[in-house]
Image 1: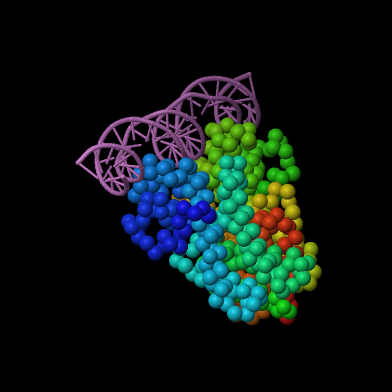
Image 2: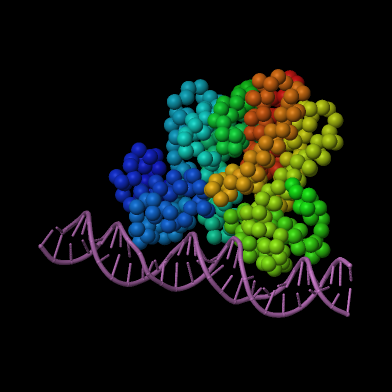
Length: 203
Length: 203
DNA sequence: ACAAAAGTAGACGGATCTGTTTACTTTATC
DNA sequence: GATAAAGTAAACAGATCCGTCTACTTTTGT
């Protein structure tokens, strides 16, 4: 995330009116993209709901894709900021930190604006040539999960076992998201935490 | 699926030229929707690539949404037709049949046109009012997974345990899809099969 | 063989979307 | 307080997309 980019965490506590134009745009875009997806939301809608003129919009962003990129960057940054904050309170080493992911997920799924994962969406949305840069943001997000999980696994298991445990844990995480979204059931995170415990039981 | 609707399995073996107009449309739409998603593909593209006139298109389908609906119905029908065929060869009762899902998944992920799950996409694509009917098709698909899995679990465990095991198994399945798509790794299905074995180990 | 059905080709209207531009107003800075 | 920066409002071009329609040709059934 660039230095001049506000992050969404700050924006969440402010009212739209109190924000500067650029942050109003970001906050509105975040809400709309989150609810309806980046494809079905147009620039005009973002402009109207953020009470900003079109000229101002294009003064801060050179294109729609750039807003989407900023949206993804913010999501990525915020998700891991919150995850790290959550995990930092956990005592018990690498294993406990991995298991804490699922408590974090349950919390996330319980937010009233939870609507699936923007990056899982992105796997499907950003397949065309003109959105390759956005697809890179998606890949980055999954790499961040890789860094988070593998750095903990390294303290627990041998390198060969990471090749098994990492895809398994990532499946449990992403599967939780889909099931929570599809069945509307946040508790699935705790059910999958039990599985994570069992596959890490010897460590 | 309605009686006059051809299924995609039949269409796969035929060349485009040998097919009747309606089937050419379906086959082309299937390929394009699968690769680029239903939102980024327009009617004109489908018409051009299926070598059909616009009039003919609208003679068989009253709207774009109707083609998407037919596409989803075909996918749903074909997926469970193949899954049931796969499972029917398995000896070993309900548990073995559940585990066979993951072999089926690996096979699916290894297809060269694998590009994630149309219904996981649909969870995100079909949120607007005018595509409620399409969202219903998505819900139906997940209900079919529920029927498939729960009917087997009933033979193995008590009803309360189904409430735990079903979301867990569905997470492993959907998580496999996302990870296979995101990391491009079909082998994740086998890794998750091990987990499924362990959570069903006492049955 | 001939009429009806089904097909092709493609123009067209109306809507929508992105991004540019013009004309004017407010805000901020020195 | 004057000037420059930043904002509003909205028209506009160009592209795309869905669905309708006209005009013509091919196929099919009896």
